[in-house]
Length: 525
Ligand SMILES: [Zn+2]
Image 1 (cartoon, rainbow, N blue to C red):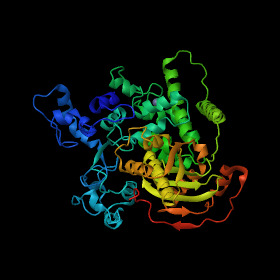
Image 2: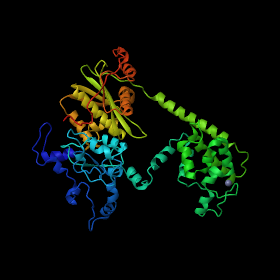
Image 3: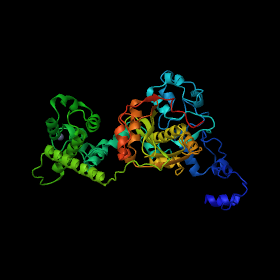
Image 4: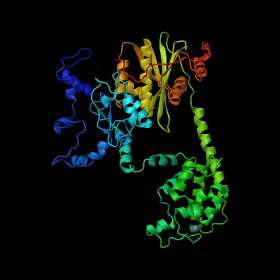
């Protein structure tokens, strides 16, 4: 379609270009800018008189929508350091400022030194470490990259999705919320137990208390002991049957706190922290299964005729736990058998290969990148590792590619294969994906790729990228500003030898670790 339009406008034929009548930028100028007199990228308000229902709807949610937009920093002149969203999901920096409750507005562009690096002397004193790490992962603003660029805040890929918009609107309250819900599905228990936990956490278990609330029943009293209100707490913790079970499981030292927490605290602590029974690394799963069995048994006792002799909950629960664990292990085992293990491979003569990778902690999003250059017989030429700050995995992988390219270019190699195990990042830098198009980092990467050398960026499997992976982990764990390795560092030597195969040539000499100028500078100048 676009090609047809282009041909119409400029009359180009294969191999021969016509006269450019109108620049492409003008042709593709969005209709909304012309029709609705839309000047700013994101105007303060879009209220209009006598507009369509759709437009009214849009203007009603405009405030919410603006909260969902983050600004990608390019030259940083239009973005406010304290009061704009420019760190993705993170809140405005003004909320994190440790010395002033409302710091003076300042442009992001003014927060860099003359060398184009973040001005840590200026920023460092007023923000906590965690915010500084986030800033470190953003390429410092640079002139010539263009103005600000809107991205969707809630997705790492930065494009809009209905799912993330819904999550923002509905689950906004309670920051720990998504983590808990996600962890339910990580419990190693049968799926119906997971669903039971989910319903319970929503406080929707159909106890007598809940049935009265819904006008299904007249009495809130416990159907088994008859002595108390039958709510979730009673059913799962304090009714005689439940209490008997917990007394058999919980050591006496922990009993007081076990029985005194509020229901929700009690439920969540046992499921997600497992602190009452020491030496039981399966406590979360055991607890979930026991709760489910207690509920099931209660339902059978109350609603089934001829229940007969019931199994002991403890015995049944432990058996179920064991069976589930076995089933899960078998599943994982069969996947492992199916996976084809491939190894690092060499490149054609005259080419060097740069392997890069990123390592991001799930817990706190601290990220490191690393990479290694090897020549066409697999000998080590250079390696690097760097702490990036705090960011999502995709951004970290892009940093890895950026740093890898920059190091290879600066070392003067002219025929380079760069390999990353992140398909998404490889697609982005090779222009096969529209995501991240306006990002300053991607612009810098593409400029590097367009320089005067032969360079290919390829995707490989993780099995083939173990050396780079170990360097990236090193960068993250050591929080090293930037390290260069002219020999393989300890800990990667065995991996290098393994990848190099039988040809030998790597000695076990200790690494020379030399700090280089911070790798945060973007582009080749
Ligand atoms: Zn009871």
